[in-house]
Amino acid sequence: MHSDPFFLRDTSGFLGGYYTLIALVNGVFAFLLWRRQGSVGWAVFWTVFAGAMMVLASLAMSASPAWVPALPDSVRSLVNALSGPVVYSLGTVALFTVLFVFRRFFVRPMVAWSILNGALVLLGLAMADQNFALIVMKPDNVPIVGLVFLLAFFTWVATKQAVVNDDRIARGEPPMEKLADEKVLVWPDLVYTELICMVAVSAFLLVWAICLPAPLEEPASSVKTPNPSKAPWYFLGLQEMLVYFDPWYAGVVLPSLVVFGLMAMPYLDYNKAGNGYYSIAERKFAYLTYQFGFLVLWITLIILGTFLRGPNWNFYGPFEYWTPYKVEVLNNVDLNQMFWVNWLDQPLPRAVSGAPWYSQLGTIFLREAPGLVALGLYLVVLPPLLAVTVFRGMFAKMGFIRYMIMANLMLLMLSLPLKMALRWTMNLRYIVSIPEISLNF
Image (cartoon, rainbow, N blue to C red; front, side, top):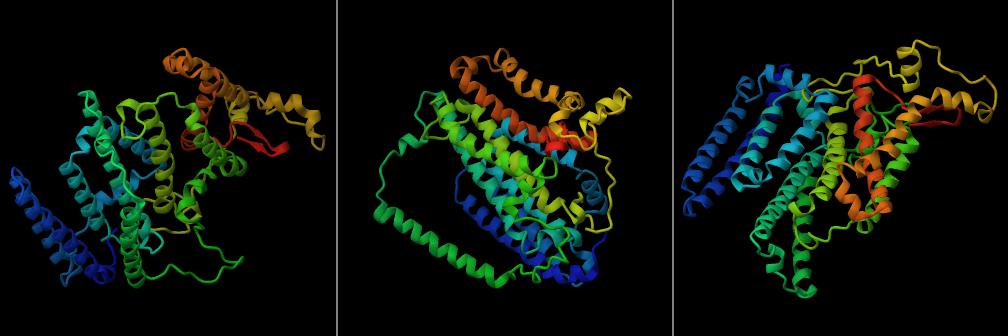
């Protein structure tokens, strides 16, 4: 589990600069707090923290690789053991739930700043591991690490604004957006702002291109493909879905339903509150549905495909060596085999070999009866059941047609994590498998 001393010697300068940058940022932050009344305690705390970062920087740049700060072997082994797909998925759902329930605590500036610094320190300690650094510091993956932090920042900003607005609305005051309801001219205000942003981003990209080598590989060849062969980062969530569904469903149906659902959202939404300003309390269902679909079902899949999927598309821990010889034997079976063979101890009903599929409809329906019944209960019976129980008020406001469209879109969205959980826990391949017409679900 120990890193190569030559690797630590080569990266000691980078880690030293990394900790120095954290120290400088927190030093400036502490200085700004000194100038504010009532923030002396926090100023002292972040000054001490900046000093601790300078100590880590000195250790990282020391002559001996043994002094480079790193996570203990026991911690790295524990993280690798807990990095399986089930723990990862349950952990992301649990984290999403905690952040939502205790959002008023996490939107506090000092809490958010503490979490950010804690994440940066953990990242620095983890980069002292060679296996972790080879993944995170790969030129292809460096932007993704930055995007994760940017996503967390902008999510925090929006949540903080929503919490402030919810408190103001509860007191009978207008939201913050209504206080600055002043028109701004495109010229010169907006154009000047865009020009400054364009110059700043261009300078940043120029420095980026000079400091970070372009991730160019050898010319493509059909006789030698990369292992793992990954799509661009923005398609990694889609590539992950292809593991659990047929290409026609994961590559065509699900993306089409996402586009259709976004187009239908204005026509399905009956709640006019929260338009034009940030709010969570007034739009909890819409907020939770969108954030769960975006953060849990998309962003986490991109992170999983980037950092935890290695050679042969196997799962690897963050500190685990990506060896192509890791083989995980999985005996994935269909629901019809589970039902007829494993549970009832009966032979699987089979169609006559060579006969047209339409002449074997009875046998096919009998064989796939367990899956068809399960899909019918999920997509046909469950929406009306929810309409008279959990979503009774929503059904009364939306009406039958709008409610059924919304309910089925939501259930199809939830089919992704459900199918993933069934694959990981029961090795279930397909709920309905009709190879005669290449139809699998």
